[in-house]
Length: 308
Image (cartoon, rainbow, N blue to C red; front, side, top):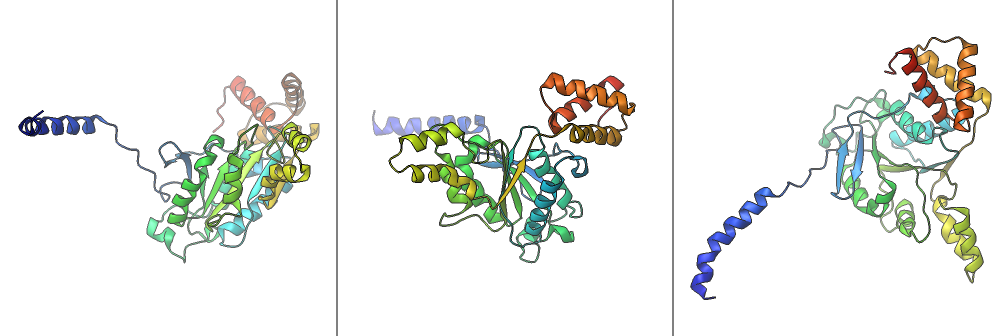
């Protein structure tokens, strides 16, 4: 093709390029950290998505985990006040309120911290205490499968300055998954380390975040068994605070049921309430906070009442 023909095609190619650019969807904009109390990290686009209303249970409604609640609340209040605090691993039985406690503690700490600040305020060294009515803590959820993108998220949070609870629900690793190594470096030990304005809370059904057979396999096949096992379990050591959650007994289960019923005004005689709740737990194969809440939802529906 001659030089003149190339020049004749150039305007046409530019118009085609401009048309394609207009048709392409605009890149999503990341929400500002001062625009909400809670966010979800979208790793594929590298953006934060604001959560208009967090799905959570009031702190006072969480029964059977009072000690765990006190410890996590105190740790979070220290962090909000700019004092040293630990990353926390909430581990143990399913449905016993691990993730509910994280969200409830976040709400309790922020009760007296209205969101009325700007990014400039957040970055100010003088604004650091949610407990004194200043900047409330942000709750930022990262999904388990997005852990490899954690360094990008921390870079974003570090640059803003607002204090954030970084939350990963149901954190665990299996088989050949090596993303736990990047998490270890981020929590402690990396050259940059965890930003001062970020605390990491995770929930898991496993104390060491990995299945026992995976650890045992490392022990049986490695030349230096102790070193191999240490590599697998040392991730949980990065959490300075371990809170265990265990299956509840019948009295605790009934306390959960009755607490919910009082709070939401569900009028049913205690004997009938307990009998129904017990039958519900038998059909579910166990007792837990989750089972109690599912019964309350069923009861409210039958009584024609809303759980607002």
